Each structure stands twice: as structure tokens, then as C-alpha cells.
Image (cartoon, rainbow, N blue to C red; front, side):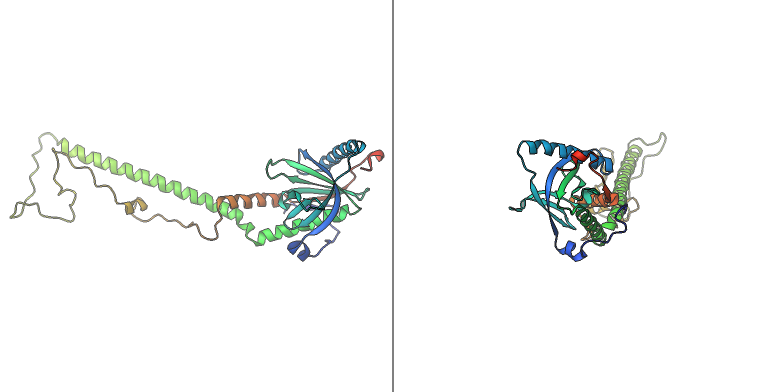
Amino acid sequence: MNRAFSRKKDKTWMHTPEALSKHFIPYNAKFLGSTEVEQPKGTEVVRDAVRKLKFARHIKKSEGQKIPKVELQISIYGVKILEPKTKEVQHNCQLHRISFCADDKTDKRIFTFICKDSESNKHLCYVFDSEKCAEEITLTIGQAFDLAYRKFLESGGKDVETRKQIAGLQKRIQDLETENMELKNKVQDLESQLRITQVSTPPVGSMAPKSPSTDIFDMIPFSPTSHQSSIPTRNGTQPPPVPSRSSEIKRDLFGAEPFDPFNCGAADFPPDIQSKLDEMQEGFKMGLTLEGTVFCLDPLDSRC
């Protein structure tokens, strides 16, 4: 996995795996808001977003508006942003969609993360003001991401790429079987046309064909090897070929049943679930970058 715990590589995780796997870790913070960014990662990207949202909050603060308080619930299932009193979920950020997380090295209160929106597919930067626990929150998000990725692999996520290849092979087999059946039908049509031509236009100077011998009842003897030729012709033309039975459609050009190693079993996923697994694989493959940076270079802009 392409992860970069640059500043955090010498840090240990803040919580036990069970706490994040079976429960969630709550944090209280002030929510400065979210804004769209062009890139999923980058210090300058989040720095510009922090400045933009801080400026917007300064204006609202001068108008008498307060920064709303929120509760963060962090687990292996994502980062939820809730209203503290009603517990109403305002935002639900799945971990495989979070690509960048950073906190302020000098302020110790400001932290932010970039998450890809599930509906618009735009990258949104969320900015928060916590009570001097910004670094702990970013580490907790990093730990939850790491545990979620491991759980994804254990639950079969590592087979997603294999399933893609199998689906491609299955589609190729279906295309070849269809092409095989079309060629078989063309061959049958050509054989039928050739027989009709030979019967309707005999060669010049050739003798008229002898009528087949009959039995004592003036009937043509039955022959299992010439069933089609024993059928009387109409107006000197051969009758149309007997349609193939429905069971023959399931056989290839050589009379064998087509090989299908990819029967849909319990281990295969419906298309909607498969697309979600593909999305999760791509998100985890991008990885989560954790960084510590300085958001506010201007001392006058160091407070919200």
C-alpha cells in the first residue's frame, strides 16, 4: 500500500485495534467547514483550504455567528461528523476515500483531511479546530485506515484484481462461443444451398438418377444412415433442413458442450457490490498520507 507516514513513522498508535474495530473513538471539535480542492494530496492544497475557510469564519464571526461544534467518531468504518446533542450524522467519510490528513505543528488545534465525495466524486477538504489534540486525531485516523485496509484484504479484497481477470476471460469465452455458433450456422446454410443447387441443376449429359429400389409394398426401405435423403422431394427440390434441436445449441462446432469454468457461485459478487470492492481497492491503493505542517504563516491569522 502506498502510504506515507512521514512525520509519524516514529510514533506508536494511540488506541488498541479492538477499540477501533468493535467500537469508535469520539473527539469533540469545532467544524470550520469544507471546501473543494483540485488534488487528493498535498501540503499546499490543504494550506490554501485552511486559509480560505479561516477567512470565511472570520467574516461570520464578525457577524455574530459562532463556529459550530461537532463530534467526530473514528473507527475502521470511517470518520463520522455528528451534531453533538442530537447525534445526527452530518458527514460520513469512508476511510478508503480519505487520501490526506494533516495537523498544525505550531497551533496543535487545527487539523484537516481530504476526502473524495461519494456522490460528486470531488475532493473535499474538511477543516477542524480541536482542543490541542489535532495530532492525536490525525494519528487515530491513520490507525483506523491501516486496520481497515488489513480487514479489507482478509475479507477477500485481495481477490478483486483476480476477479477482474476472470471476468475478462469469461467475456472472451462468451464472445468466442457466439462467434463459433455464427460460423456453424453459416456452414449449415452453405451446405443447404449446395445440396439444393446439385439437385435442381444436374450436369449436362448426365443420366437421370435412378429411383431408389422399393420393397414388396412399393415403399422405400428405411435406412438409419440416410434418414434425410429418404424424405420425398417436392417439385424436384430438396426439403429444407430439419432445424437443430434446442440441446444442440449448447454444443460447439465439434459437437462438444462449451466449457464454462466460471459458474456464478456464492463466492462471486453482484455487479453493484463488485464495483464497490473495486472502488475500495483503488482508494486503499492510493493510501493515506499523514503530515504535520504549518497552516498559518501569518501570525495575525493564527486564531480562528
